[in-house]
Amino acid sequence: MAGQTVHISGIILKKEASGEQFFKLTLLSAEHGSILAMFRRPKRNSRTPSPDLFDEVEMVLEKKGENGFGFVKELTIQHQRRALAKSFIALELACEWSSILSKNLPRETETEAIYVLFKKGLDAWEKRKHPEAIFFKCLFVYAKDEGYPVKHDWFEKLKHNERVEVATILNTPISELELNPEICRKWNDALKHYVQHYTDILI
Image (tube, rainbow, N blue to C red):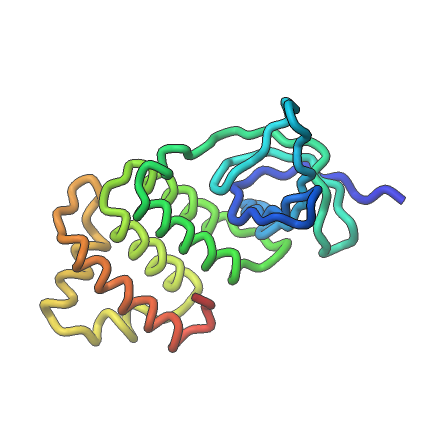
């Protein structure tokens, strides 16, 4: 019996091999949340596009069950982010951020705000400027939007000079930020420690 056919658009959060014939894709969709999709590997010399990590795609998916995965019947790549690969640090942090989202996003639930946050982060990482600060902004906003008191329980308990550094990262546009990457890396570690130990977000 054929499954339900749905049209879905989103960004590839994760791509991993599944046997010899398929890739298992995790797609972040604004309307549908986290979606698992099995994509058949294109044959040699095939013109079928093969999506990569962080590609924005549209697909026709044949769902197998109410909350199960689906098989990709048609796929169109709308936007690729090849510029990310030109910066190891930007690519590494984008991958870390996508891994955090893939571990925590609910399935089959609207996640428009998270989708917008992820897309903005990827667009910023493509410019390869202050990638560490972009990660910090993304994680802070995500934790706050998930309802955790990251501002009152973490930020406001910092020393004055520390709050100044964190506020500078959060409030300054990336294009105008002038801060040593080491400072951003320090605060990334501190924020991840707080999130890991004082929230239910998986890091």
